[in-house]
Structure formats: C-alpha cells, structure tokens
Amino acid sequence: MKFTALLHHITVESLQQAYLGLRPQAAPGVDGITWEAYGQDLEANLQDLHRRLHSGAYRAKPTRRAYIPKADGRQRPLGIASLEDKIAQRAVVGVLSCIYEADFLGFSYGFRPGRSQHDALDALAVGIGSKKVNWVLDADLADFFTRLDHSWLRRFLEHRIADKRVLRLIRKWLRAGIIEDGTWAACDEGAPQGATASPLLANVYLHYVLDQWADWWRRRHARGDMIIVRYADDLIAGFEHREDAERFLVDLSERLAKFALELKSEKTRVIEFGRQAARKRQERGLGRPETFDFLGFTHVSGRARSGSFALRRFTIKKRMRAKLREVKDELRRWRHLPIPEQGRWLGSVVRGHLAYFAVPGNTDAIRAFRTQVTRSWYQALCRRSQRRRMNWERMSRLASRWLPSARTLHPYPNVRFNARTQGRNPVRECRTLGSVRGAGRKASPYRNLPIPIC
Image (cartoon, rainbow, N blue to C red):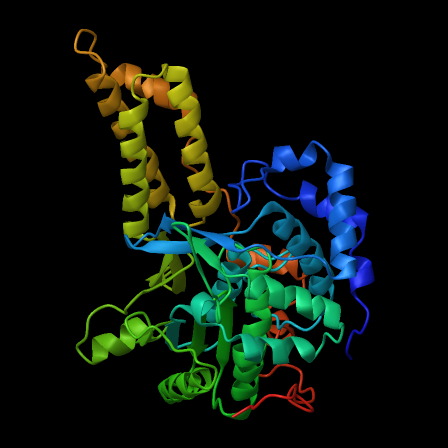
C-alpha cells in the first residue's frame, strides 16, 4: 500500500515536538542559529517554518562538515544541519517511521525506536546459544553513508510513499550540499552522517538492498540453521554449515555491487565459532577459535563452569585503551581544578562506561577500566603539587566517594530477550522475527517489488 497524503501530518504541534526533542547543546549549522536563539520567538518561527514547508517555499541549507575521531584513529565525517532542517527532518522522520516500522524485519536493530545496541547483542547471543551455529560471517559495509545511491533510494521510497511533497523534501535535504572550510560542494550520492533523517533513510535503503534479500536467501538457499543480526551497516550472520557461509558471502558481495556498495575486505571474514569450534579445531591441530567484534564487544567461544558452551563478551581492548587515553589527556588539562569538580566529571565517565559495558561476564574489563581511571587521577593529582604528595590511601577514599563501583548492570541476554518477547520461547521468537531459518512460511516479500532480487 502506498501513502499519498502525508504532509498534512506535519503540523505546528509536531514541529514543536521535534524542536523540543533536539539537544539544546548541539552545534549550530551553517546559519549559526542555536537551539536557544531559535526558541526566543519559537511560536512565530515554527509558524513560518510550517508555512514554508506546506507552500513549497522551504529551502534546505547545506550541512556543515565536521570530523570526530574514530576508535581506530581515523576521522569520521559528520554533517551538521541547520536548526530548521533538523526540526523539519525530525518531524518527517516521525511520520515515516510509523510506516516503515511495520515493514522492517526483526533482525534490523540500528536507529529504530524501542531498539538498542544491547537488543541486537541479546538477539545475537540468544541466536548463537539456541541454534546450530558453527560458522560466523562478520561483515561491514565500506563507506555506506557516503556511497548511498540517491536514484535507488528514490525508487525504494516511492514503493511506499506517493506524496510528492514529502519526496521533494527528502530530495532537498540530500542535494543541499556540504560546506567545508567555507567551500560548498555538491552531494550527488550519500547521506550525511549526523543528519536527523539519515538513519531512517539508511534503514530504508538497506531494507530493500540487504534485509529482504538476506531473508529470502536464508529461506531459499541455506541448508542448515542461519541467524542474522544487523545494526546499521554492521552485519553478523551465523551458519550451521561452512558452505552456506561462504556461498552467502559471495552472493552478498554480488548483491551489494548492483547498488554501488561493497564490503570492507579487511573487516569481512568467515570464522569457525560456536559450541563445536574448540573441539573441532583441536582435532585438526589448530589453536583456539577466532573471535569477532560487534558493537563494542569482542565475542569469544567460551565455556561455563559446568563445561558447556557459553558465549563470552568482553570490552574491545583497543576501544578501552582509546577511552583511557582520552581520560588521561583531559586530566592533564583539568588537574588544577578542585577535586570535587574532577570527581564529578570522572564519576560521569565511569558511570557512562558501566552503563554500556557492564554486561555479565565482563567484570574483569570494567574493573580494569575503573582501576586505570583511578590511577590516572592519582598521577594527575600527584603532579599538580610537589609539596603535598597524594598517597594511595587517600586516593582510594576519593575513588570510593566519586567513582561508582564496577559491578554488572545488565541482565543475561536470554533473560532480557525473553522479557522483551513477553516470555515467548526465544527460539520461536527468533523465527517470528525472521532472523532464524524456519520462520513462518509467508509469501515472498519480493512479489510486485519494483527492484531486482538476484
């Protein structure tokens, strides 16, 4: 079914909700207008924006290019939109999400309401633990956000959206261009990372390019069990048979090439993994099973105390080292501030780290993080005064006062997954979500789909 009239859902009230949902501290776009400045005459500004959106007089402004450091030391380009563009995009995304959330498949977790990175991690853990997974494909799309094809995206959107006014708005945002160092550059492909509309547009693109195709491939070609979990442009697929994994990788590469996409060769691989991996590799005279990284965690084929298979998850070491270096550098700049100010800031850093990484089985890593933060703080305090040296006993008291203790905060994956699926069998729920082979045999999603399947 196509939706022919959507723009009337963009009201002054929805624009106000979009404005209130933005971060007040966010960096301004090329127009330099901040959240606070726009809000000084909010009602009149939103009325004017609403009028321009509905009359066709609205013009999208170029995004401002900025860079943030990545965990591997490289720079990630971001596109910072102007405030009115953020408001309009957020309002439109709210309308389109209601449509596409009913279409998106269950194994897609990135940038979706009610779904988080930990939901993706839980689904992966439950899938590996409950299905016959012996091989894992760790795949990552190369420069996806900068290579997204606008013409294909338009065709995908037109499959569900027939309101030309909404499609024109999206085209304006995509073609507004980028300003970097005062120079404007056209944007003929890609979607700016950091733009409010980009996550939804990326999910729409990958829904047709990857998700529906992967689900079709699993039903059509997989000889054994197969699980899929995708978060944005990161994909993990588990297979019972090595032949399935290798054939899927070849077919996936060919599929992506049709849409001007490709996999990162240095980050894409098939590894032996799962409950049988350690025994089979030992029989062949090989070492321990290989590991893979996903959403900040290194996943390891481990053993429980009973000797049974257990998926272990640890903080990626290079990511933790990078964060500790960042803390150490900040402490050098902050060492002359009062201890309570330092303590409050460091407490928020440790608290944020624990909020994400304090999963069952990762206790040693989160303890090590807290210990290293304490040591860096101790060194900074010792350097700021030669007359009164800080001793470790006093440092321990400061750490106990300001830094939260390192303890597990997240439930086990199957517990949270069962709660999220309202107590239904997790294997059955995986099948319902379309992430495990054997899902309800419904009609092919490719019937009447105006895009190539194979």
